[in-house]
Length: 472
Image (cartoon, rainbow, N blue to C red; front, side, top):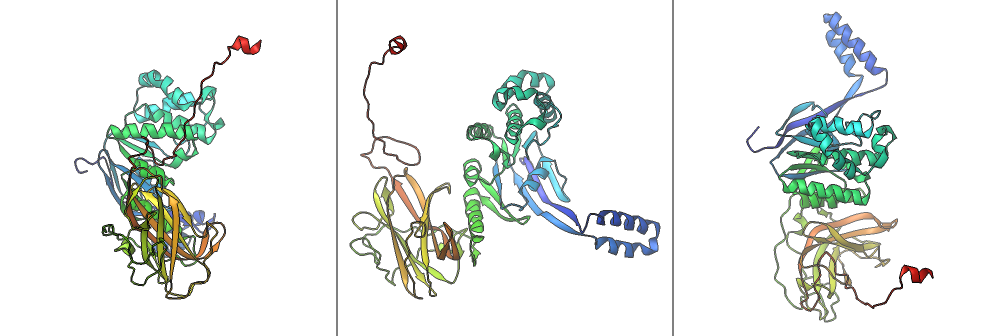
């Protein structure tokens, strides 16, 4: 292994044999034995044996290197091979192809209760698991109280693990991990079964490990957790690596891939990407009148490089004409004062007749988290038919009480609503269609967080009666 690499996966893959029927396995064994006994029939026996099963590649040719301190998320839809990858990285599962190399102590929290003997008590499993990880029995005794306090399972510590709920098993497993200092920490999505407060405790521990330089490999369906805890991410699709890069880019691509499944004609997700060209703010831009309403001018141009943004979906049914932000005086702006009222104007040109078009948008922060999302369909607004070649201009007016920083806008355009928030045909889904900055209003009182709730403070004083006066 190269110096400075904590975990290396080289060309790893996992192939499972899927038998045609329950009896096929026995038939294959008999054919294999017959081929050994009768060499002249070996080729025929092998051919007959191969007809009894098919190979399923759960994971194919994955290459990944993690250096000390790296934090990598593994994301993908169900069945994409995420847990298989983590099990091979942890050494629980042997790869069919490739090699796994690790340096230092590896701690893994995989599927629920992994490594537990369900007939043993929680206490006995604590000693068993901690010893396997590398702690001496004397160290486990010293740290047992801390483990029990973290797990918070009370008297169940001395009950068999088979009596535990899934949440209790995860509590105990993670509690053991808190008492070691691993070089590599591998966590599957098992934390999702824990309650809110327990998850907070676990994430605090993970952050503490990361500050110490621990290498972190994490599988989750919670994109917020991936963005919060991971610097890079791997997107798996049907057992193959589709993308490796920044967590933000991987999450955007994963989200767009998931969006495809909600539509009849999903379009193609764009994988290559580059940031859109910066544009200087300019007042009274063409396409918007003095009241801030879009006029749909044909001379309005779409943002540069939007179609190349990672995770975008583009079809030949529509084209983005413009995305603009206007203040209360109808002046186009790229810098927004927190708490101000704005008009987000989106123009989309139809390339074919549409009977029920809808426009939507998302606001993301610099980590890629979705802070707000809505659409004309969700707002119960219908525009009517849109002829080919005509531009639909949708103006969304709202107050934007977000914290200072950079934000981006995702634009969606679809035809035909169905259900509560699904659509019939996806026409556009554009990541990074608009980048803008929010600055603080200097007149505001001091606050921090994500959103300004603009609280009002009232108070009064009272002389509360003593307990004896109240009862008398």
